[in-house]
Amino acid sequence: QEGARAPSEEGEAAIGKSSGRGHSMAAMVSGRRLVSASIQTTSSPRPMQFRPCIDLHKGKVKQIVGSTLSDLENRAAKKKLLTNFVASESPSHYAELYSSDGLSGGHMILLSKDEETQVVARRALRDFPNTLQVGGGVDVRNALSYLDDGASHVIVTSSVFKRGELQMDLLERLSGVVGRHRLVLDLSCRRRDHGGDYFVVTDRWQKYTSLKVDEATLSTLAEYCCEFLVHGVDVEGKQLGIDSDLVRLLGDFSPIPATYAGGVCDLDDLETIKREGRGMV
Image (spheres, helix red, strand yellow):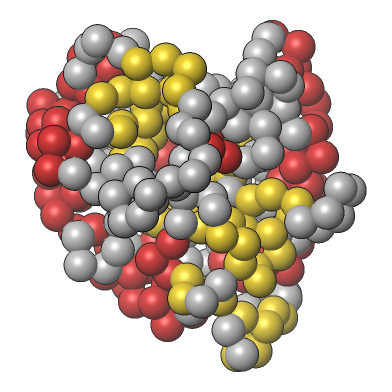
């Protein structure tokens, strides 16, 4: 597996398969025609595994209904923030649990920009190095500092978009700085219309971009990262069932491991992910 390292091979919910074919795709991204050569980034089959995840907001581990989250620091939010759960334990507590259970590569997502969140997040990274991936506000300026503090990977989304367009120069630069093998690309998405295509959403999932999640997009972007993270934003945090159409899309078309998140409420949902993910999710 090209660019593989131990933390991305063990304890991950995303699993890969060898498709027996390369991908030659062309895509229009931010006004540029990006032609990808044959991508040799497919992975070998393996049993589906869990990616543990914690979200940090105002220094606390929380479980939030994702579609209600907005930039509370910069403007008065008209939409009420809905929180399902606030933990009393610190991020380091959860990192210790994951480390002791051999669950590497768990996600720690920073949902607010305050200093307290930075302090507790970086403490967890230093206390249990190579245990967590970190996302939320990651860009080319701070990505290496998270890796230096102990993150196994960095997760990026909004910082490589401008005015709703994916900026390939920013993605290429970031991938070059941290290395493809340590970069996870967040393609969390939602439908504009019922039954329509999925489009990536950024800025706390409040803004649609022009980037459609389809075979061409997944094949092209796989050259710059080792894994995709995809939240089904319309079902995230609601515990009412998964977005099976999105899982099926990832299973059919992602050439690299893809972690799906959103809406899981029982073991039947996990069976659906296993079946519809076709050994890829």
